[in-house]
Image (cartoon, rainbow, N blue to C red; front, side, top):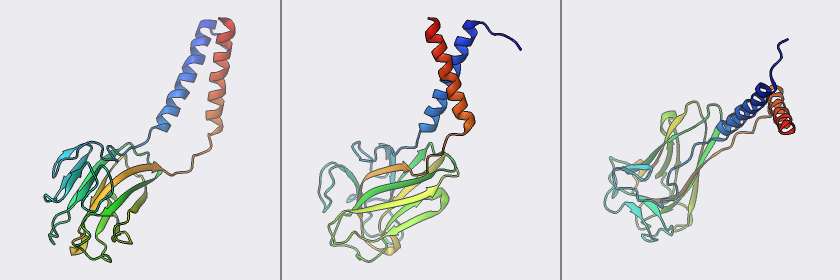
Length: 213
């Protein structure tokens, strides 16, 4: 059986720990929503601040103060004046999904123009485009209150597009959105015996290095 020099053994222990640390860091990486609180400006019918918007009219767009029946501070109003042929949207391509993990995207929405739309209509949409996964919601009740939306899915790819729409199904309800976030809700797996052994070997290598210094 070959014998390794003390120096090589020291570097071996460091390399093992570095490898384990890198693996843990990679596992800890997670997809994030860019500008989910809308602190940065999002252009009307363009791309910027992490988002792309389209089909909106002048009564829609990014806002920096409460108004238009919306109580949020920074937010985006998805609005198109009730045009039946189009659903105004706000979307973001999200990267960094780990295949097989379950993710939940949540956010807040509020009816922006309470004089318009049918409170019972499913006029707000939350969609994961590539999966064809769609959740439709009505105005939050009672009128003027803040509603919370959520959509959950198992990742089969590294990237997905989140799209939010207003005025769905021919209705004229428009919404301000804010506080959009994503979470990995998968159960944390128990480390395999081989992984635990690798960690232990790395720690032993570091301990021997300290004693020899």
